[in-house]
Amino acid sequence: MNIVVCLSRDLTVFSNMTYLADGGGFTHASLGLSEDAEYYYSFNFKGLKKEYRTSLKKKPREMQRFIIAVDEAAAERLKQIISEMETQKEKYQYAKLGVSLRLLSLPNENPKEDAYYCSQFVAAVLRESGCVAINKNPADCTPNDLLLELQNSGQIIKVEEESDLPDPGEVTIGKASDQIEKVYDKLPDLVAKSLNPLYEKVMDKLDVAEDAVGESPEKLAKLTSGLLKNGTGKLMEAKEVMNAILPRKREKKQVTEHIVIHPASHEESVQAAKLEAICFPPGVADTEEDVIRRYETAPELFYVAVDEDNGTVVGMLNGIATDETAFRDAFFTDASLHSENGANAMLLGLEVLPEYRHRGIAAELMRTLLINERVRGRKHAVLTCLDDKVEMYEKLGFEDLGISASSWGGEEWHEMICILNA
Image (cartoon, rainbow, N blue to C red; front, side):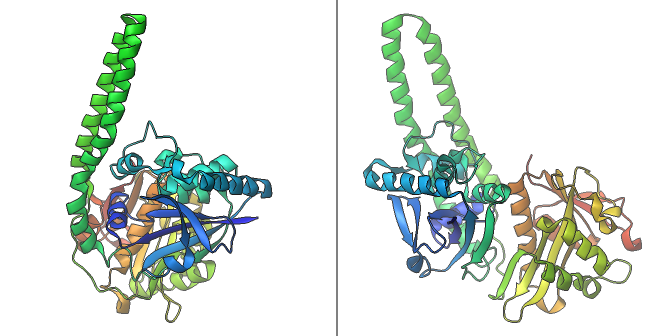
């Protein structure tokens, strides 16, 4: 039997704030109980709700439907869980504290029972029903984490695109930055308001315990008090961290609205391989055979930009994964060096057809790959570039390590690194 997990992003203030805090990707998750479901279940500020597909299509959004194959018995358990939640709808609340901690990139160590945000709800019911083995704590599961769990499960049988955002990475970045500057200052206050009642409740219970059993709870009270105060302090510090990591306003670029970026199919990889000879000079360009072999070996690290008007592959970014930390020329020609669980992604080709340049396509290809590799748990992304491209990659989050040992094509290359997970 098949169910549907819908992952999306729209242009609301909260969605833009989540998009920037998470480093991109999806910002909302919902669940359909059958492949042809007319509505999805999710959580918002009003609690458990139904999201009708017809209503979702009324506003611009980036959206993908992931069709998941599940055991029939597990699917029945899932329906029963949802049905019971619907009959006790007033019992369930939106997890304001949980989503605030998520925006601050902090773990939710004491999730409130019967309170969920969107992806926490989907992850929790999928795990409880046995439909999907969700390994991550649902209370800390963002929509991007949920996507990785689904990919790792091997149960995705089809992905359907229902997007109508022209370019989610560029078109609203200025607006989103403006919005986030106004909103995220309020996050620590929101978290503090949620923590204070918890603090008082714990202290009241400790007072009762102390009266009952003597001096021993004093140590416990002191320890708990210290932990709570320390936790609140960390929340306030997180605001400063958030200040540092939020993207600055970027210059808006014109982006053709019919360009889509996604993992390549085999047919698209064959078309993409021809870009090397167009975009790079002889001696530097990879052979078509090497590019196609790279796709066949590491398809998860091969992305294309496609003009939907004519089906042309207009850009690509690819690479391999390895536990090695330094770049070497053999990566270009020997796809067998790829290790599926390698700690680092070695990026080997970013190119866009000349007539499609200066539209933000290369930057969005890079951001898409970096987001997904961060979610996969890779530590670093490494690439080499000529001197005139160093500044471009620095704007995308890379650091210049200086001149590389690579001498590919007889050129002098800079080695660049982007830290994905410390």
